[in-house]
Amino acid sequence: MRAVGLPLVTAAATAAALTAVTGCTEKGGAKDTDRVVGVTARDGSCEVSRKEFPAGHVELAIENKGSKVTEVYLLFPDDRVVTERENIGPGTRQRLTAEVRAGDYRIACKPGMKGRGIRQDVRATGGSAAPRDARLDRAVAAYRRYVQRQADETLPKAEAFAAAVRAGDIAAAKKAYAPSRIGWERTEPVAESFGDIDPKVDVRADGLQDGQKWTGWHRLERALWRDGRIGAGEKALAGRLVKDLKDWQRRVGTAEITPTSMANGAKELLDEVATGKVTGEEERYSHTDLVDFQANVEGARHSFELLRPVAAEHDAALAADLDRRFAALDGLLGRYRTDRGTGASPYAFVSYDQVGEAGRKELSDAVNALAEPLSRLAAAVVVVRQQ
Image (cartoon, rainbow, N blue to C red; front, top):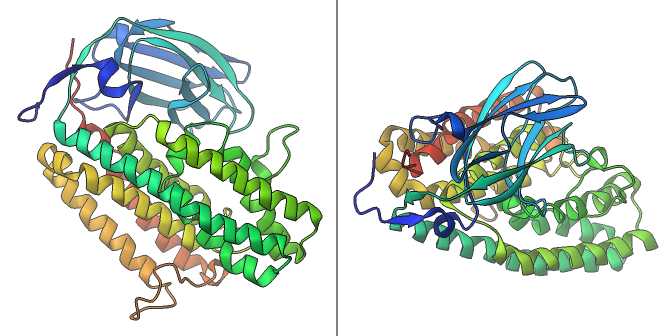
């Protein structure tokens, strides 16, 4: 269905690169056989059924015939992420639809987030026209301002954290740690799209690549909470963290942002909660997982609210369902705030190691209940003109 007043613009002008839509829907699914690229992932190969396809919408039909590969990426030549699909189990099939401009890309099959994976060069040829709602342009502009503001506001908090580390003040560093991460967690998919920044500042020990030096927040988290000491190495790492975050701050304005990358980014933030925060793996030493949890949900909700006018027009039931589920999750998180009723701080939470198995399951169920309809948001805000 085409929204009222949709102008036609070229794909190169609309996305300036990409528009990823997870799932296969009537609005976004590739109908033409020349727009479907079969991707067969094996432990020792990543096979594609075609290496050229028309620009516009393309559908990756993924089949995992290996035992190690769990992720498939569509990448720019410089390794920035166009779109990805994670948690692809052995013997399973999944569909991933993206909107791309003409140009060169790479498809990578990877075992988790480790290594470069096995890659195939592919090319989108020609161009196509796609309808674009002016309200979506305004949403993208507003989100771009939001992302930049989060980066700008993170820097002084990170500098305060680093200053406490360099001063050897463990208590002050612990207090400054979680607040320094809020802006990053709200907009993590945008930061991750650059490829090289996230491994420097937010990697956990079990996510290190071969030969990679462990730097960033979580390396310092371990020193503060597990080791209980700050040495010369940690002080140097604090300075490195600020330097890397300044790089993020400078580059965030160049990020590729489209309506569907916003929608899919919101879903990615919920996946971050499900795979890292609910399990307690993200903040395994500090147990400040609920702070990250709250920030992830806020970032996802902000994207949804910016896109809501168009989403509600195309799928009113979906928009209403997302309203209800965001509210329910916020209410559930509220049970764990230590400032309930005072409004003193929305980020004052109990330590996550105090949340029992039943509570974690309840949080997990609420996240999953929100993630499913959120995965359909992208299809509700994009209309692809069939060729």
